[in-house]
Structure formats: C-alpha cells, structure tokens
Image (cartoon, rainbow, N blue to C red; front, side, top):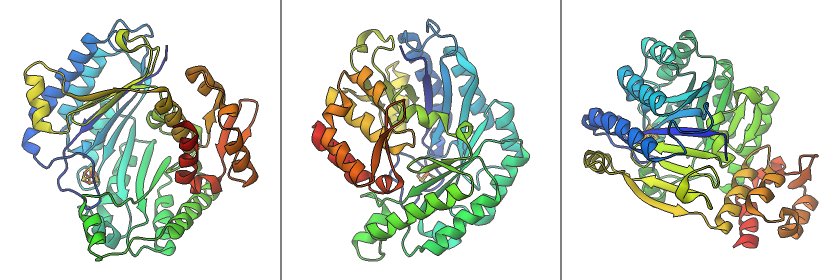
Length: 403
Ligand code: SF4
C-alpha cells in the first residue's frame, strides 16, 4: 500500500483568459460561492465512500501534500481557503508537515492576503510571474504588470514565506536568448527556493495558436527551443538551482515541489473541483480498484459540477483503468523527465517486467549516443542534459517498444 496521498484542489476562476491557455477556467466569478460549497461536499462524499482516503485510512499521516491550482486560486477569499482547508482536515488525516501550496497570480494579492494564507497553514507559494518583460507579458495576454509581480514576490517574502516558486515561460514569439536571460537574471534577484521554466506550447484552440495559424506571428523553431532549454539548465545550475525535472529547478532537494514529485512518482492523488484529475495507484487499499491503477477526471464545467453535487452525485466525467502498457509508458515518460530518472527496481516491482531486457537495444543506443545511462547501485536509468533536450523523441522510441 502506498503511504503517500496528495490532494489537488482545482480553482477554475480567472479574471481573463490568457492567450496561450487551454486549461479549464471560467470568468464567471458569480459561481464562486456555490463552487466552494460544492467542493466541500465533493470532499465529504468521496472520503465517506473511500476506505483509502477517509478516517479509516491505516496511516494516520496520509495526506502529505495539498495543492491549490487553477485557474487563479488567489481569487479565493481567505474565508473560503479556510473553509476548504478545514474540510480537508476533517475528512483526511493531514500530516503535520504537509506541504500546502497555493498558486498566486500577481495583481490579485496583497501582503494582508498572503499573511492570511500563511496563518491558515499555507507554507508554499507558486507565483505566476511568467516574465519580467512587459511586451512578453502582453503577448501572453496576462493581465498583470512587471511591478505587480515584484510586489507579489516582495509581499510573499514579507509575509514570511520562505518556500516560494516563480513560474516563468520561454519560447514566446520574437523572444531571444538575450531577453530570456534577462528574465532569468531578474528572477535570481529574489533568491527564491524554486523556479519553474516552461517552454511555451501553442495549444490548438487558443488565440495565440490562431494567430500563428494565420501567419501573424512566428513561433521559434525546435533548434532555437533546444538552445533555450539547454542554456536555461546550464545557467540555473551555475547559480545553485538543481535541474530536477524537465521544467523545474530547486535550491536543494528540500525545496523540490513535493506535490509535483508525487505525480512524477505515480503515487495516488485525489483531485477535487471541475476538471480535476484523480489517480489511485494499484494495491493501495481501495476495494474495487486494487489490481490496476485508475485515473478519473471531473466534469470540466463549473455549472455542471455544481448541479451534479446538488443532486448528491459525484461530478466524475470519466474513469479509466490503466493497462500494463499504459503503466509502463507513463512510468518511463515521467521518470525520464526527472533527474532521479526511472527507478528500475520500482518499475520491475510494480509492473513485473524486466526493464533492462525489455529495452536492451534502445538503452545501449542511448548510452552510446551520450543521451542516457543506467547508473548507481540504485539501478536507475537517467537521461543526460542532451537526452532531456530530446525528451519527446526518446519517449517515442520507448513507446515503440511498449505499444
Ligand atoms: S491565469 Fe492561468 S489558468 Fe487562468 S487563463 Fe491565464 S494561464 Fe490560464
């Protein structure tokens, strides 16, 4: 039985849709009070039903991480954050040292709000800065200013948060390595514990993608993006940040996002709110799903979500039982993203497949090309930086062996 459980709360409200975003979110803030009621109801119903999550849980400290993501969770009034956390503490047994993160968008918070979060037990902030360049912020369709980002970071530090992460984006139209390096240098000024550097992807259906399709803007080519990726890794490593996941950097192991590490290690998580996903790892005590992992996801519509719960129904949209091939592929895909790599012992224990035999020629080839290697007494397969820069094609090569 897994001894770790994470909880994700999806807060699907935003003041304005950003031009690159394809996450589920709504600007209908009038739903917020009913959403908070429904969310508490969902937590109560699901923990009543599940022997894995409720107070019958065998490990008294089971919830190790709680993450409020969005959307814009910092649009939640403090009293609503308090209500949600109280419900979680009532329905789960939350570890005393649980990591509790909330995503914060500049322009939606002040020091009073952030101090309030701290006093409610939130101990980690992820601030959606994206860039310190106003032109880039505008291309992304974000509503905040550079000044608002700086104010939010300084207010978080004054409120006593020492575990702060900044989210940044690179690879935007017309961006150069020089302007991106300016962003990184500015981020370093704040000496935060964690930086996430996401490569912009042009998701179909977004306004930015439409502009690209109409030829109104040019996306950087894959070679330039590889240069950005490699330069970011080298630069941040030189400045004391450990490149522990493809897009994530931490000042030491203790400052890694424990919540996201749980995803990458494929441990169980319960997701609440519209569009939230949940994952039950096999053999963790849930009576009907103990043989294979199960993923489920909620309705991606706040109104439908509230309606379902008002009828006492769970707002689950779909559920899938992961096949052996899916499990293999996901373990490979997630492991390759991280600097800890694929834990071969865990892979074989969970899946009953011999890793080195299954992928023998591919592993040899990657090793010969300097892209990856089996290392250490712990038997892990890790990609080098050059390998991580080619992650997509390497995952495809593994997939070809699995599927
Ligand atoms: S604030 Fe975040 S979730 Fe909301 S629209 Fe922008 S990118 Fe999407």
